Length: 240
Image (cartoon, rainbow, N blue to C red; front, top):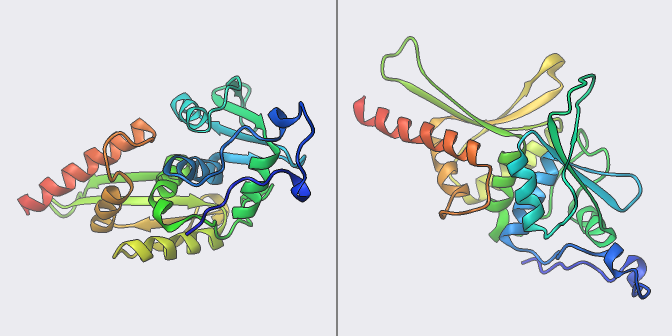
């Protein structure tokens, strides 16, 4: 069982008077809320090279607001563009916290993590919350009725990453708590991305796993879409 807390400061030193606000804003004691937030950082977050600042970017302002609420952040939410786009249609939250930055390094995150990330040290009891954050950040559910087989409803749950090593770790961790079998496959242009994909019955199990009680922090649109697909899958099973 993990009981990690933020250290006093680099080298174990106590911060000087007046600097506490800059060193630590976030409570790093493991909880369901923190695990969910780390799932978001793993997928949609970024650690700067200054050993202090972090950023979360999303097209959903709800996700940014939930993240800020869970970590008790009061920073202003900005907007930014992506790549060569001019329109600023993505929401962004940047904040500085030396202790939290060090904590994220200790659990497996790094700057420029996209293609190099491997395992993340998440306590087992909070893994489902981390996984829900991972899904809200870079996951998706996809469903449709098979055009060939009448009444056959297809449902897939996918977790997406540029790091194959990270998805292989994620698959192993999911298997520890669920009797499911996913596959890691290449995706995207030039095969630069990877998917950890689960088929219908395993997707339905994982829906129950990550949304284990009502009212959990989550991205509403993804939960509703996934819930509708699961309900349709259950109904289609009765009709077959």
